[in-house]
Amino acid sequence: QVQLVESGGGLVQAGGSLRLSCAASGRTISSYVMGWFRQAPGKEREFVAAIKWNGVITYYADSVKGRYTISRDNAKNTVYLQMDSLKSTDTAAYYCAAKSVSGYYDRTNTYAYWGPGTQVTVSS
Image (tube, rainbow, N blue to C red):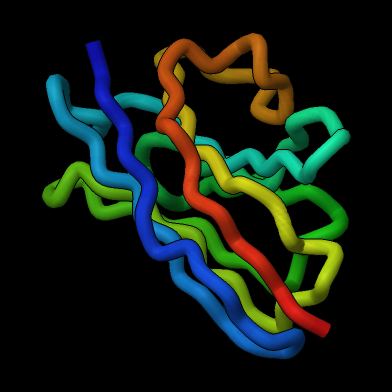
């Protein structure tokens, strides 16, 4: 089993930055694909970014490409999401997820483990 806990959310003005962290425990995540998703009130959970085990190959939703950066530190069992140039439309609860199988990085039902989420609110 893998336990995931997100941190780093908060309130920020439009144009600002936040860095989310996802700390894993219970098992090393070095071989897992790690993803970030978000869910705004009244909307479905949507893909934000994913990173393969080696930290080199990354995937991003078009809505965040060029503004967000996903990274990982396998030695610390932690994944990060650097969010820059934030917009009010980025307001959502952000979730970290992990899976052991490659492919379909943007699909929530392919991820086996989820954190409880951290709230990001961007004021305009």
